Length: 534
Ligand SMILES: [Zn+2]
Image (cartoon, rainbow, N blue to C red; front, side):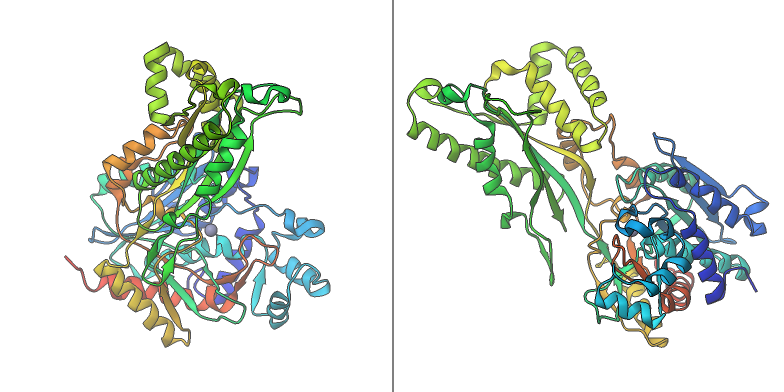
């Protein structure tokens, strides 16, 4: 009974999804929703009525939102997954087999040169399915569709909303667009969203680890940045200028690995802040000293919001610039340094206001619009805006600007939520029932779209982020207000896999096709359909 209610049928469905490649920004990513729609419409429930909706990104990609409606109940669980995958360059000569789970598994059996010993052992056990997207995360989509079919067959009295999105691996544009459709649906149908359930795969801690993990939160990520504007000079007259690289070296020294950014929650700890990109912006070699440098940082967060991270960041940058000017003032008293040198440190928000004051809002906005058109990558748009604005504000002299570049994934944690506590307990119980040990982890450390469905920041922090992210409200935006509207507790319950984003990406078949359907059904039935917690 049903199309996808046996392990075999679920495996078949997953393989179909994997075969339709959908690497982020590819054409396959654009057409993938057609396959999901066609799949859902094999069920008369979705064919006969308008229960499938689409959300559009600003670059012509679509997310699909499908609504299974409860009989009377307004309680709702949102089932979230992404259908885009990372690229396949790591498969090298087997690139064209990466999306065919059967063929790539067969090929690896003949030549396992790309695999490490643990992957080879898994390959020979025949318990795993290999291929791009099998674990991250088309298995999640397969599971949600199988679950919805079951709800239709048994007429569950609860609302299930499938949200399957593109662009999760790059900028989360799919999820950010889907939020608006979800919000409309919630308002129109007067739904009570009780849970946002993602099914990203669990990341195994080490090779021999056979445990399942349920995540009651997701780690956040934010990208503070610094732009240093020095003063150019000829190398022969070094003291007539000031090298932006020299200033940046002080800043970076103080920021990278700084323990002030490390957060701890129970026994879990965030990795330290590191620079992802640091260079002077000079196109070619010449004897002019570099005078513009930029560094972008990655900060992981558990609890802090944009405002808190930025305050810590700015205070450290100021200290570093102080140290730097002290040394310069002490060492030299000729040329540029004959007057006491001081380098202002300002935020982008302050720079913007100063520029508007000096040259007018219209001119500033034109500079920003043009700057955005010069580059394509989202984070570089912010850098270009600062660069171009500073070029018109040269009279300021040397200065250091701190700002944010996209993306921002707020941290979210539901581990203290009563219903989520019960759901976690039910995952552990239902897993043990079929012989799998499941353990709770508070923060999913893979970064995921759950960051955008539980509102954890505040007005002050949101405003500060908007003001200090140069491209905000232009090429990049986070709909904080809409997130507040659809905000609900979060959980991640997904199948066991290994090596996401690697050539050895693989999915434990037993977990994905047999265990997870049982666990997900148990959680929904026993925690969300039986007891309504008021
Ligand atoms: Zn993923």
